[in-house]
Length: 309
Image 1 (tube, rainbow, N blue to C red):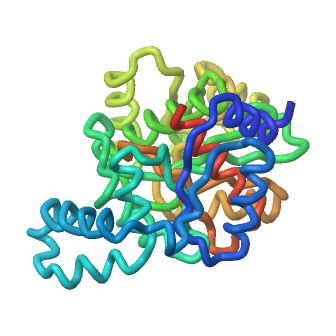
Image 2 (cartoon, rainbow, N blue to C red):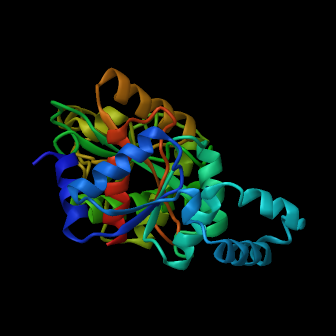
């Protein structure tokens, strides 16, 4: 069974409700129709007529109380709620829906800001980052061509602790959504001391922190990407690697590296990129590329619904 089929089937095995605030995007509307038809999830396409004025007023008041120090003007809060995105995010916060998917007509920054403000940050992880599920056709590496790439969308220059938290949340996602045992590589331009620099020290610190957080995880770093995912290269560059060149979770040292890498693999390797999937929120939420297809929306909903199970 291929990865996409597996995710959709798992989502449909225990239906969850996902809100889609971008009701006026034709791709989102068509995806909502197909998701319901195929039994992937229950969806709330948040058209204006579904917004209860009393609920909206209550959400505005609650939001203002949460954020009045940073957003002291009530008129500014009301302006935010002119966008259905904030109403949908408050629905997720309250548990009226199980997750949120948006981004077809909003930037990643817009979606992340709304989710952080409304849904909130999971105390245990303490940061919000993002990842992609990458499905590379005809690829023998990773998990038969399936990988997690993180962070590719949120944190520009993660410190050691943030890197460890990104890795931990990514490991939990690959376990929850795909039932894979995570094999995590902390990536770099160096493999186990082949180069020196502050960036290498940061990864060593992250490795130690991650092992302290989750002693049972299979993780190693710093690793160049070929030593992380190609067993033949791993045997030459780092024969003692516990990963053996079989990493399926790739943690990038910076947003720049992660974003460039996922887009290269997507477009040059003809890969499917599911995400960005937010990590570290109190409820599952997913972003969409503004260039997304109907299939992309469906797959992000399937992942989000599976995470909510």
